[in-house]
Amino acid sequence: AESVAEPAPKPKQPRALQFIKINEKGDSFVLEEDAFREVLDAVPENMPISVVCVVGAFRTGKSFILDLFLRYLRKTSDPDANLRTEDVEATKAHEEWLMAEGTHLEAMVDEKDQQQSEVKQAGFSWRPGNVRNTTGMWIWSEPFIRYNPLYVAGDSSEPEKVAVLLVDTQGMFDMLTTQMLTAAIFGLSTFISSYLIYNVDKRIGEDNLQHLALFTDYGRIALQAMEEENPSSKHKQPFQTLEFLIRDFQDYDDEDDVDACVESMGPYLERILESSNRDTSEVRDQINICFEKLGVFGLTHPGKQVPKPKYNGDLSCVEPSFCALVHRLATRVFGTNSARPTAKELEHEAGAVVKKRIAERYITSADLFEYVRQFVKVFHDSLNGDGVFPEAKTLLAAAAEANNYNAMEANLASYKKAMDLVCGVKQPYVALGKIEESHKEYLKLALLHFDRIATMGSKDRIAEFRDKLELKITEMKEDYIANNANKRPDILRFITILLMISSLVYLSSSMLNIFCWPPQTLGFDFEYADMCGGALSVMRDVYLTIFVFIVLTLLTSCWGSIGPLLQVALAGQQATPEKKNQ
Image 1: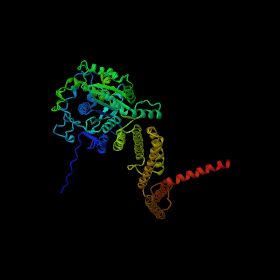
Image 2: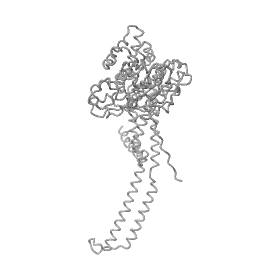
Image 3: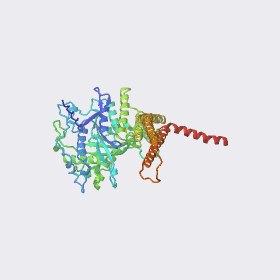
Image 4: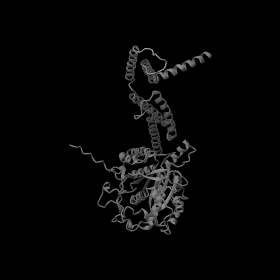
């Protein structure tokens, strides 16, 4: 019977994956490593990442705005399709993408459906009304490759590409989750994001600023450590961009004038951050110290139909002024993804696509996994231990541990990649001396690169990781030598065959010499004696060549062992006259 080939597995559709899961009691969480790795493995190797995370109180529309972001990102994913010669009117720009995939948001959870995982994952699931929907932390499985606006303007070369990751978080203060767990999720979101969107309702209140104060002590200690390790550092804040996103903002003079609305937000933020009260001014000072960039963006009310429990995701019910502002917000966060944006687009996308940085180093997806794993461990141990928020020093130590581990792993990978080209599985047998020489060169490079990256934490701990890196590289070298030895040709058998051929040729020439006599003429005229002599000459050259080849082969194969001994002997001879002179 003929075998029937199994059908190829269907590729997984992009979807939201839960990577931080809350337990049933609502007092602890765990990292879903497989789900998180699936997302990070989809990022091209060594590409910088931007992590956009939305946090805020529950039932304030975080997942709803993320679904609109997804539509914008999908529609603008092709840079060539984003080229334009003239700007679109601000109140109509959203029309190009908002309903390109249909008039309804498909990720809405039905009121009767309590299982978020069963939703058709066209986006982050959400539901209207006041019932909690998102729990833990979710990440979109598909990274969006975007142009970095900083490398677009005035640069004729290929713009830098960044992988954008979207993260949705459980709402705070939902009365089902402990305050400590809420703080832990908020803290984890702050640590892993490069662009943190703090979703607030109607205004920025003092309580919103106080929640951020939980992390100002971490920021202060982290800042001190950074300045001690690198006083000339150009990055003076531990965190990057914080954007206050005000929902149902009511202070715009004209909601239809998008440019005027955006311009009015700068003075609004200045007023919020000003305070004559000593206690509140300290909180504001710490927030300024901890974040590189602070911003605020107000979205008007989406329309009277949207908050109702029976709302079905129909985007035609959403107010045009809200949609126009969402477009400007999406451009502000994700850029236009155009290699040649217009002057106005460059202005609107300034500060977009923020690359994730830890201390002085921009990280990749492989690095992010270890950072999240370390932070989750710290929060998990604190919640299950004395039940208090982790101390700033503990969080800083976790960041240092992840940074040094990533430095070690990155340089192990670099060493392996370089040595694979010298004596990897696909390479032929090489002399032992070549392996040793290459090992010394790439070990030196790995240690130098490690020293540039591993700059966080105590010197003793950094030294431990450095020693571990050197040990692992030495072990890898021994593996390369062993594998290379297995590819070594069987020299004894090879030489035996050559000797047999040489002996056969020698015996044949000796026998032929018996039947040869001197030629009758001086020149070569194809007489018997000339032909016989020529054959003898060729045979003699053959077995002499084989003999020389055998000697050279033996010397080459043994040089890896003889070479070092000769070097030691020569060094000893040079040292002897010096001692005599002394």
